Length: 239
Image (cartoon, rainbow, N blue to C red; front, top):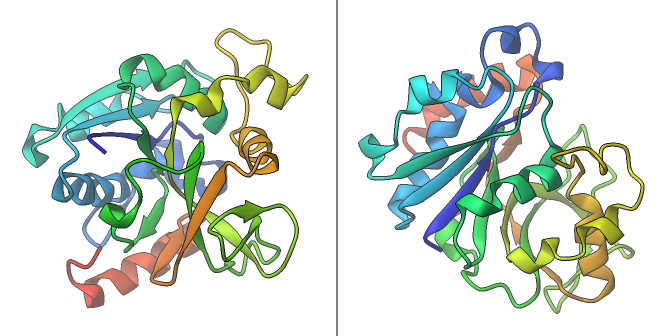
């Protein structure tokens, strides 16, 4: 994997008032912006090109991150307009800036100590998702992980998609069929969630995953950000 995409376009509504002046991925934990933890990990595994999709307070990202050269990266920005395109629309919008190979895509508002290098550079199916134990705010989970590394809609126990995965471009080939008449699908550019595409791939046994048993945080509220910030100094430079 030489290319990566970081989803950073969300409005961060649950994080207000912190996100009224700062995009959520630029909020700090452990002395650095959340997105910088990802950039450092990507550089460490040899990724050299990162696309950051933006919308809310988009101008702050190049101000803080620049062109990525301080990490040995080349960063390009995919502006989605004033209304974020959701994860599926964001991935589609960023494709012209990405190469033909599978892309490592990461939510800018999670923190995780997973080894990105352990993720497959070439997924056996259309995508490979990093799954984590269900957090308190999402106890029902998302998908079940079988012994064959395939993800399934049914079965127990279910795990939560951790916002980190490797995606083939072909996942988006039939996006219109997958999302149907969902609100935003007919907009220009289209706005739609990634989950219907994942479910369509899963129905064809083309969605794989692996379980991460280490640390992971969905930094979705000021309280979870404060907790992560308090924990990271003790963790040193881990992650």
